[in-house]
Length: 126
Image (tube, rainbow, N blue to C red; front, top):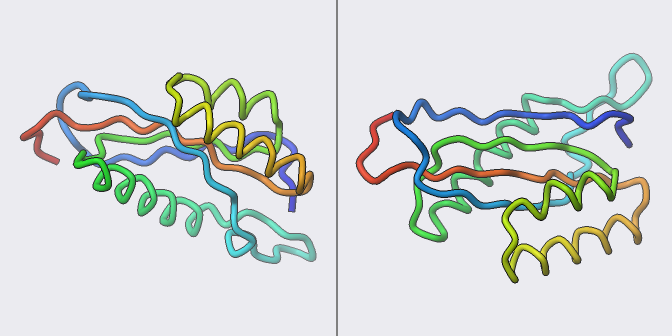
C-alpha cells in the first residue's frame, strides 16, 4: 500500500486573519485509508482527509488552541519525513521524528502523514 509520490492534503477551516502559531505532527497511515480500485489498493482521500481534520482539531484542543489550517503530506520517504518533521524544532518534535523514522525502518512498506498545523488567533471567526 505504498504510494510512489508524496500526497498532500490541505485542511481548511475558514478562519480569518493570520495564524497565531504553528506546530508539527506525525502519524502512521492506517490501512483503513486504502480501498480497492480496479484491482489495486488506492488511498481514499475523502477518508484520509476527514480523519486528518479530526486529528488536527484534536491536537489543537489538547493544547488549548483552535485550528486555523493544516497541511499534511503522506509519504514513506525518510528524507522527506525528516525535512518536514523538523520545521518546528523542539525536543518533543525531535523525539516524535525519531519515533516516526524508527517506525518506517521497522515497516518499510508503511507510510506516515506529516502535518503542519497552524493555530488561529484568539477570537478569529470561521
